Length: 483
Ligand code: NAP
Image 1 (cartoon, protein in one colour):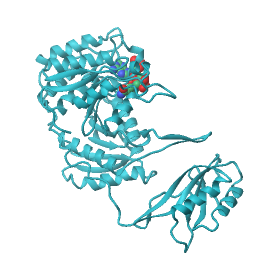
Image 2 (tube, helix red, strand yellow; image 1 turned 45 degrees about the vertical axis):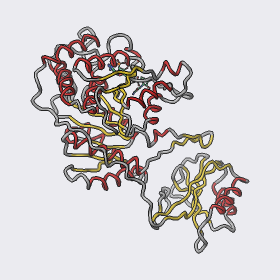
Image 3 (cartoon, helix red, strand yellow; image 1 turned 30 degrees about the horizontal axis):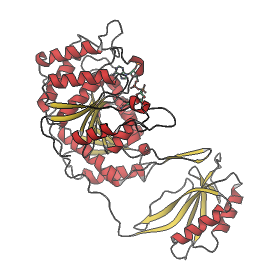
Image 4 (cartoon, protein in one colour; image 1 turned 120 degrees about the horizontal axis):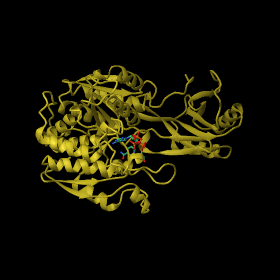
């Protein structure tokens, strides 16, 4: 990302629900702290969907972001069910904000079961790949599929971002949380990339942790974590857990970082039940503004604003309704006034982080081409409720005369043909694996196409996957029970 120069242009999207209230507070406090920002107001979310723009983001907003490269955003409502996409996802994907940084720390004066413990950590979540690529299909009327796509490039970018965040914030440890024990290729790619790149950061301790254990450890001993890098869905879940440790969504800020665009927003949504009632806690959004200031290199201003916010909470003079009983709580606007008045008067903190600018210069080396690769077969997915022996017999017939042979059929990942360890509760969706016949030439596209043509005369097939070998090793997983 090119370093912007002051005065900094920032696109501000007030958003939906409590968005306009909390965004106004952050904007006002950034101005009060003297940040040289020129705001460009823009729209996205519910209002835009209602105007009939299915992405939820109009062209004028996209143009503004292309111009500023920086966004301060309120939460955007996502329509539930069929139809429109999420405007948040549209923004993240359109501007390839690949990294979602979610820091949390104990907030002075905010009671939680963890109060008094030294919790100060950052979840660095991959933001555009994984199951959230949104590639879903009904494979049969009864079986849905969501593709979990993870790339070497995506893994490298997020891992480097995590190490750079650690360095920039004077942290000493990065954990990589994956489910590589089960998803050896997708989650495994993140683990392997992490282990490769860790060697470039000898000043930082790198440790892999299985994601479910990470959740368990976060609840029991959160102090052990400084930075956790993880895939999109795992990061979504872990970061909501971490915000719960410190008082809830009202205290969880985030930054979506891309090469050319950075979007700063609270983790919480539009909280429609309290919208327009002057009840929202603006802290998460203000802390996102603090992240924006640091992103701009305005470290002193960031420190001053963060200090005033933490002092306001720590002094016990006021709390919003998510923390205090309603009759004792102050409204969003009173809370904002208190923070503003504390900007000048709050005593400085004795312990603060030594924030430095990031150096993301060496990201994106990426795609590797192996010396040897070959396609050794094909998985064909078919819909059928016929008995397995009949399906097997028909498919073996389809492969006759081709350099391919049916080696197994699996149902939702468990081998069911030619033999099975135990019989799962079958559904109408089968993966039929055809490998190269012993001694036969390498199967060509024409062979696969002929196989598909023959299969389609008997069964409805819905997709197929090549079986790739890289450096003579299978680049596909085996079914449960397959040797
Ligand atoms: P939510 O808006 O985060 O609200 C969940 C609950 O958390 C609220 O009902 C409220 O609890 C509390 N809360 C959240 N932020 C608060 C704040 N600043 N101050 C005080 N209390 C706060 O989650 P949701 O209800 O699941 O989602 C609502 C809408 O927001 C959906 O359309 C969703 O798609 C969208 N959303 C957008 C984003 C985004 O733009 N990045 C993120 C998440 C969700 P009480 O009800 O107890 O007061």
